[in-house]
Image 1 (spheres, rainbow, N blue to C red):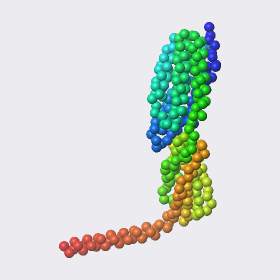
Image 2: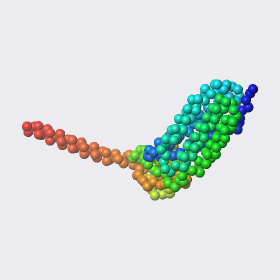
Image 3: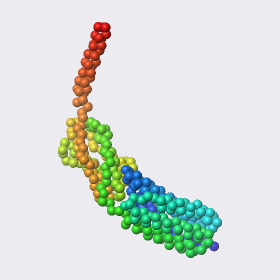
Image 4: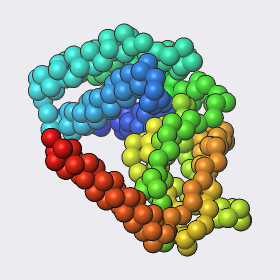
Length: 296
């Protein structure tokens, strides 16, 4: 007899996959200069991604079983290693060291993980016994997990801290005329992530111009943003600053820096003079050596 596929069970599982992805993207922070934040983020990210893969495998196995594509014996055999992986993930999650600001979020995440593991165990029992009670219980657990995921967003701490500008570098370090200046900014944000980085510049104390910078390396939580000041004529003074905004609307502004454009032709007389002086010194030094050797 062909088993009827329980769509009500598969749809919540799909919702869990989507919810996990959203939690990983929007809720977990990455603070490059804090090892505790970095370790926590990497561990939680790994746990949720692995669980996402396991949920997909269980969903596919359940579908094959309900469509008579897989026997009870084969389904049981395929579920055993999956259950072991689920339990290992639960153990790892329980041992995580959580930053104090995220304790409530972490506790509810653990509950979601536990509900998902219990749901998988009930599906395994359903494969063994073909008792619909276990399938229905699995469905109930999945629904609770989905509800818990929907509540996680309310547990994210308020972001009242502005982003941090760790470093600003320019290429080349000594700009010359008619050559663009590239700026690289290392910016981080501990909670909601950097969403905008602007390069403001002014030539000869004139009107300020705004250029949007792009994310070149890393992530919104810890990344390198790049932008360029257009090439300028010689003998001009350029002032610039960096403005960084996070998703919560917090803004940080760097100190104003400046540079004078160098005309390479203007340096030729100086280099020539230095060279002439160096040659004169060398000639005099050699003459002294020759005289000294002659007197000896």
